[in-house]
Picture 1 (cartoon, rainbow, N blue to C red):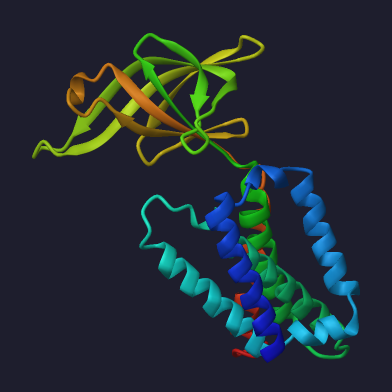
Picture 2 (spheres, helix red, strand yellow):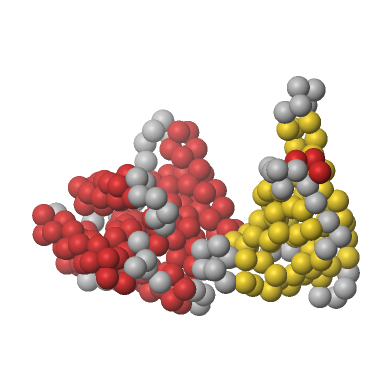
Amino acid sequence: MKREGIFVMGAVIVGVVLQIVSGPFPMELIKFPVNFILALVLLILSVKGGKVFRKSVHSLKFSVFLILLLTVQVLIMGFMPDDRIKDSWPFVITYFFILVDLAIVISERLKKKGRNSSSFLLIHAGLLILLIAAGLGSSDKIQLFLKVNEGESVRNGYDRLTGKTYRLPFEITLEDFSIEYYPDRSIKSYNSLVTLKNSGNKAKKWNIRVNHPLKYRSWWIYQYSYDLDKGVDSKYAVLQLVRDPWLILAWVGISIFFAGAVTMFWKGGRP
């Protein structure tokens, strides 16, 4: 484990240097289908990789070391303002090692015939799928913001991270913005009545409330903000639009993970 730990730490140090010299890891380089291919290659190499490689990283100590390393990075970066943790080189490198370690742990357990380890496999497989979807899949996630005035139609969203403007596959018209209050005049909810028109000119009205997003096609639309100075008299709304094609895979991973947890509980805590 000592040799592998030194190797990982060396890779992380290289990542720190790259972070300083070139900035954040360019996530746009691993958009689909590159991230999908990387996921497949990772799984194939982990299952079919050499015996020496598997023995080097397949150990509980190595797994704990990687988790602690990742935890330390998150804690350190959490104190840094405006730092995108998941896009930093050290984080990406550590994340990759964790994926390799998880895949090898699963493949090694599969080779142990006759051992009842269904809960162990489900938990680790679910975690691996979830991490792949959340990490490699994050490069395909689109998160846009748009400000729309009452009576105005908007089709372009703004990406705050990249500073780019994207054209949406549908048009949003803000028909009305309203705020609901509790008897003590504290805000209960704020809502946007919108009309969505797709490329086929089919229009339909929807009500978007705070904490109650609208699912429209492959997009989630959230009521994000409004004119705070004018309050109930606000004439515009700020909407957040999110499209994550890997979200379904993430939920699959979560479901498999919990299935494993339930199975382990049913078996009295035995893997």
